[in-house]
Image 1 (tube, one colour):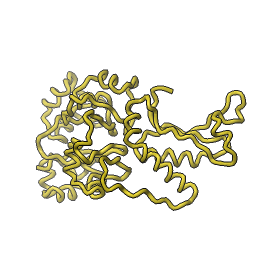
Image 2: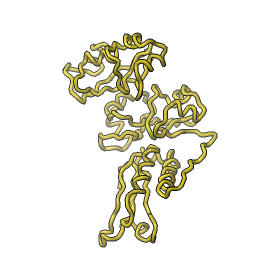
Image 3: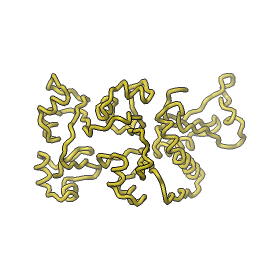
Image 4: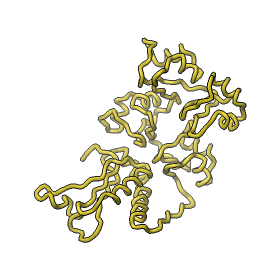
Length: 310
């Protein structure tokens, strides 16, 4: 199959799906896109497995693990960088399936890159790898603290490849990414050899290395939104919102994408569990000062919301 992306696990007709599910889940946690687990039957005899290695292995629990598609550029990049992590996910799944204690391999003292795992934060990674957060952000050209599972973080400037990559985040579209990197959608699709407009969280996209992000963000219009409300939320004049989005109609549609221009002011992105009190304390402000800076009339925050902190 050409043009696929992600991992698959094939299990034998004589076995149940438990181990296959564990393996695919673990590979997903290591950052690869999960496709499916399945069984395949021999056309001339549906009682037999299609693959010889599954039907001729005696009293075992055989599986075929396909970690990715080497004819897919994004998968090829991930397999080159992450294959050991994916394999370790399989080892862990087998240990858990057999009720054996699992011991992860020791971290190498000198490591050139780190693959973001479930639950990781820049703070936890900086502690684990003994590298300051600002150094990690500088090497990887990060303009915020958001990470995604499977994202590759380089820990040494000389090891950051010249070719640019972008890991798809929740809410991303080809349109928003093309705007972010000042590329045409067709250029982005051609560079990544993709024909569909559908993206998956964690998908790796190659970005023209001559392009740089404009640091704008995309806002998806929700029920009840208005230009006035969005302008207040992000402290941006309505006129600027209209101009940057080339709006002819001031009535917004649910699901519509709006470009939110970047600000030179210090910005904090709301994380899960944040409150106005915790954000204010973290940034040396009082709650009232924080609310005034952001024109907030309530104490409610939403994950991903940007707050001005200066």
